[in-house]
Image (cartoon, chains in turn green, brown):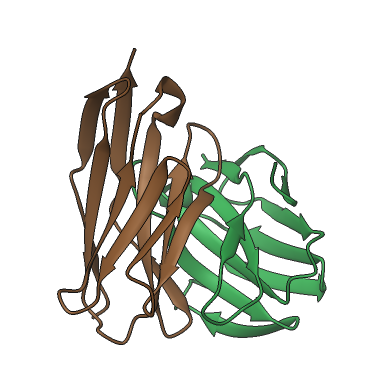
Length: 112
Length: 110
């Protein structure tokens, strides 16, 4: 069983809505990641946090805003999304650097 | 740029047979290669990984081999079972970013 939890499991939102995705880990990992996965495609990296500081932003549009309030929590704030942003959003954690990453179950997002 | 190619895209085997999935990567500096299994409606699950100072690694019915010279690595599943049916992704670490292959849908028929 995964020790990375994500809420909500499913989310449907309109293009004018503001919503947030949440990720929580209890493995003491210092690195936390957001990935986006479209149907039948591999995960694509969006953001990396290391020691609660943003270290990588893969040129993600500003309508996606990450936040790491503490070492156990990672949020992804969503605003003014487009239908093409509909995807599975995955959180992952790890010890950082060239080491394992462990994924949560994901949030299935639909933008209408 | 960084790239990981994965083949085949689909693989169907009879229960008890072996399955092999192959990947190639572009950056010779890559030194960490994990494999993930993703079942329908779930996140990717790390099943095995290998580092560049090792040529082969086994864990029960699964094994991974790495040929650094050729920039190839492969996943081998022996004695396949229906519960092995899933999408499998290889990945390579480029600096501190994981780049995934395109995935292989494995179906194991009873």
